[in-house]
Amino acid sequence: MPVTLIGELERDFVKERHIQDRIGFLQLVYKKTMLTSEFISSPPEVEDTREGVVHVRSEVELTDGIAVVRHFYEGLPEDHRKDIKVYEFDPSFDEVPIQAHPNFGGPDGSEESLFKKYGGYYDANGNFRFASRQPKAAGSNRGGFGVAPLSQGPTPVGPAGEVKTLQGVESYMRMGGVWRVIYPHAGEFLPDGLFRQVGTVQNPLDSEKMPGLPSSRNWLKAPPSARWRGNAWEITEEYILSGVGGWIKDIYDGSTEDGS
Image 1 (cartoon, helix red, strand yellow):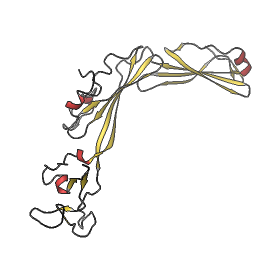
Image 2 (tube, helix red, strand yellow):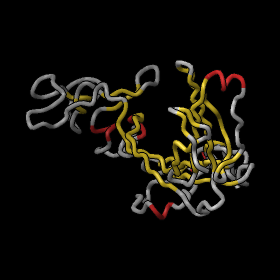
Image 3 (cartoon, helix red, strand yellow):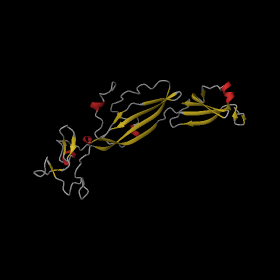
Image 4 (spheres, helix red, strand yellow):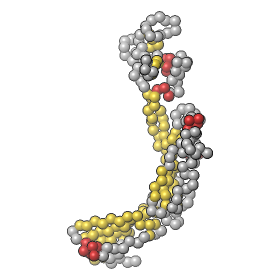
């Protein structure tokens, strides 16, 4: 339909914006510029749909006797792709207690474990600590409390750059990450089974698109998110990467009401 312009005034709505995002949702903005007096006496009607998507909101700017009316439309058009998905992997470093380290060992660990190598112990309150001095060599009677004095002075690093004590260390950085799958879902209701197995150990949706995961790690299904966008849902499924050793199925697979 042709548009008749009178100065800056528009007798009909004109399309100001047309954007289709990465998962197929269409966003439209239609604008009309008119006299404020005309707008007050006869506000323009809203068309419920345009180009197959629906009206979601309107905005009006009033400046110097001029009213700029914008109608916003959003949704999935009828010809949208049915199989479109967007994938994201968001890596991170997570700070976790040093006791969770694969080589922590504990009192019964090997001599090369962090616990034995750096003089780990539990204080009177049951809190874990690293000693301020190196563990004494087997058969040695030097030092007290089962540790030997540090050589080369009290610094925690030796002349060759070796670490001599982990005193004060309570945590370490472990690689983590979240795998996301984002897709549209047409219709009024969320898909069946969307929340099934949340909180349990699961292979991520389309995980074959991210090969190379170490066999010692696995994934925990996080609660999905859903956002209504005019006439359809935008859904984001998330899976959280474990540390070394994986999420423990005996804990997580029994922590949900529907683990099937």
